[in-house]
Amino acid sequence: MRHTKIPLEDTKSFSPFFLDYIQQKESLQPFYSTYPRPENFNNLLTKKTAAYGASQRAILSSTLQRQYKDLAMTDQVKMNLSHLADSKTFTVTTGHQLNIFTGPLYFIYKIVTVINTCKELARRYPAYRFVPVYWMASEDHDYEEIKSFRLDGKKYVWKTSQTGAVGRFKTEGFEDVLNALPGEIEIFRTAYSKYNKLADSVRYYVNEIFGPEGVIVVDPDDRDLKSMFRDVMLEDITSHSTLKAVEKTNQKLRDLKHEPQVFCREINFFYLDDNLRNRIERQGQCYHVVDSDLRFTEEQIRELIRTQPEKFSPNVILRPLYQEVIMPNVAYIGGPAEIVYWLQLKEAFDHFNVPFPAIMPRNFAMVIDKTVSRKLEKTGLDPALFFEEKNFLFNHWVLTNTNHKLTVGEERKTLLSVYEDLRKRAGSIDPTLEPFVGAEGKRALNSLEKIEEKLLRAEKRLHEDRLRQIEQVKDALFPGESLQERTDNFLNFYNQDSGFIPKLIAAFDPFDFSFNILTYTD
Image (tube, rainbow, N blue to C red):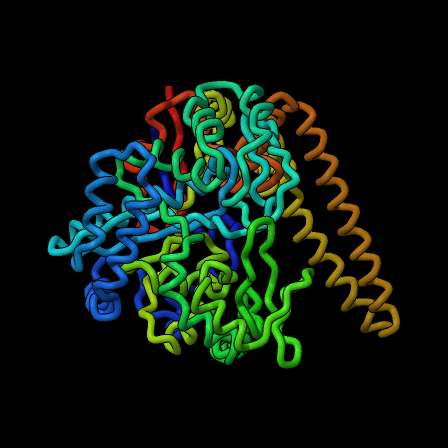
């Protein structure tokens, strides 16, 4: 597998806000505490050691042992679960929704980045252990986001009418999808037939795929874990302190011409029950669960937080804080949008006296299989060029490979000079003639450009087969005009190469914020 890299900014696929962060723009430094470089973690380890106590470790350790009790574990997973009780052990985490069959490729890239980050930190800090963690967004209620995936150009959809937190969904209705899929899918057939709940299915397949690397799966939809978050629940719901902290940060970001990514509310919790995850709003002296008949007095809310903390589910604003309260985490691995919204949160972390982790971008990649690789080689184009629009690619190839002169740059320069002389001559005779000459010059330039377009179009007709090949490569690497990693599923490559994930682990450098191009060669 050939491996090349290009700067992220050259892909034209990332926001200026995100690029400013990875380029360490000075203006953004107040919005985080530790820039993600291996040498920067020493202070963060000290802070997290002081903030994360033995009681938190005990709850986390016992909870995960319970969540894993019915799962066959690798020695690496068993070891990491036992190490979490040790004060010298820390986690590196990524989170994602419970997409069926893992969803888009970047789900895999996120976990690979976590694995490699732990390896590098372990090498740098041998006195500590680092455990890779996948945080399931099991409480998320956006079924539309998880219901489908794309394999070999075809979209597969899981149909269900269930509502509420997706992690609690019953795994019914997968038979049609499983029977329609090509290739080796035994991992997923077992996941969706053996386990009755979607969260359990996802834990199973992540354990099957990444268990040899010791990846731990955390399901946050858990009473014992929520019990560690009671103080934040109470303060956010009754005092709205999170809103005050986040709005203060948002204004600073707006002053820098950066628009905040996510919206903070007065209350940043949902009420969670079977088939229900709805926002909580304050109405006068009472609390109302939106789109339901549920209402509580403040006294009832306080009692519910004390006795049933599992009924409260943090939204996107407080989910990061929840994660950092319940885990000995030193780094969070996220995509571009996640990185941006984490930068809205440091003030809230400071308010609740929780150390802010290093916020790391996941690895980004495009994989070129053997079939596409052969077509690409015939085009003679650099893979990096395919981040450009199709028309640019076509023109670039034709201009590079033609034996004819197709551009009119020299003629344009001559024409501009001629009409400028004419404009000055006409103006010396009658100033009112200048606009007329200028308009005629513009008309002549437009005619010249039309000639160039026709020359290019005629030349393209002579190379239709090659341009069609370029288009096929472009469509394969950017399905639906989107980055491959945001669209295609890892089975596109895993079904042809069972060593696909080990190859990713070998190729990705978690601290190199470039775009990876991985090409299969014959």
